[in-house]
Length: 116
Image (cartoon, rainbow, N blue to C red; front, side, top):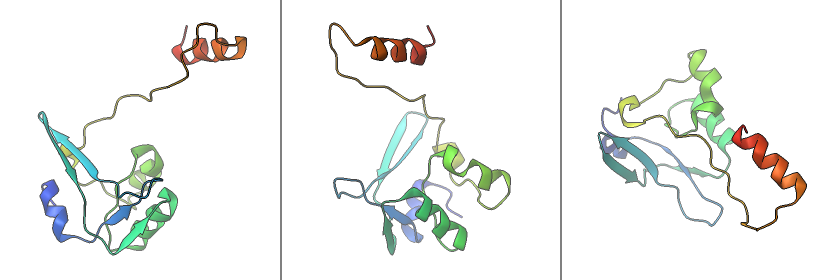
């Protein structure tokens, strides 16, 4: 089992290809130290559910948003690795075109999203 992110370089990881074609570099952070690794792996995918199924099939390590694998973790099908290097992520961010007068629908949605 990897104990620090650099240990992943000796494991078969599932690589992820971003929509623009570049490989996703795995992000780790602990005590103010941030690392981005281009992990090794014989399989590169661009679909999280297929990557999840490949990890469940065995022998590979994947990098996932916790929400997408929380049931597998709870059921013991997957285990967290490098937990001290993966701090909780902040909430989602919403980006929208900055217009002086948003439509009534957009204004209502923003009020709902902000909880106001």
